[in-house]
Image: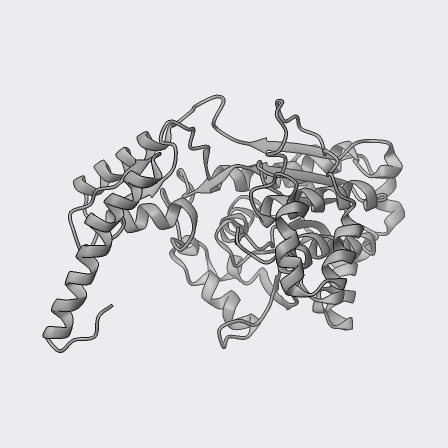
Length: 395
């Protein structure tokens, strides 16, 4: 077990020859493991890394459930149906929160993680594009710093993998290379501004602080990368930048999705139910979609890449950055994506449909609003009226 291996042993040992060797008999820590991508990552670790001793999940209580109940809820999903009880028993909940100082860990839990963990996968983040800047900074920037600080305490750590986004450098006009780009702001300066500014004033300042970023998500993800670049010390770090993560391609279940409440998931889910009829967007732009199982594969493989290369600042090597995108090699336009989704839904309709499935992507704001009123708002008002006349509560 990792607890019997010293820091000197790790420094002097040859780099692992494979992912299986890196993870054989050791423990890993996953943040964000109860989320969509995190769940796919945990399942892949259990299925493909049979020698893995333990998967610690950093989880916070939520929705009236404690951390153990939340992990039990995760492992009960169809995603894990093919696993034995012995395999699932390798997953252990650790109560913590990336938004809290010290990750909210107890001294005992922190000591256990420091002693046992060899690889850290940091996937926790707020993916709410409309999150207040203070919230996004605390979770995405300070949260990453807190995880890095924990990694720096681990004497036998072999790699830390940070799950970023392909859009963190969206302000660049040239081709985005696989390296860390400096932000227009010093992360510590942004942290200071956020902590010292009243919420209403900070809200009004946010557009100017973003400096061309479309939202606080991409902005704080770039800042987090800068924190890793500047503060990683001897920690071997890899950064994975996926574009828009969609359902699984094949493993362990084709098309697995467990969250349809945000982004393109929400629009397509609403469209196939007959609820959403139109979206405001440029239908000729590329929908840069990547399957979640492919992203999980890259996240795990990048841990081996960081461990094999040694990317700590003390080694004189740069952070290894990996993009997972489809737009250049296999472009799919938004109108094609929507059309294919509607076509498949008509071939195999889902339950609970309110209307014949159809959806369009409109570039014109006026046309979009007109279609929304005619085929979305007015029918919804009419259905609600019928429900009231029937003595039922409108949905």
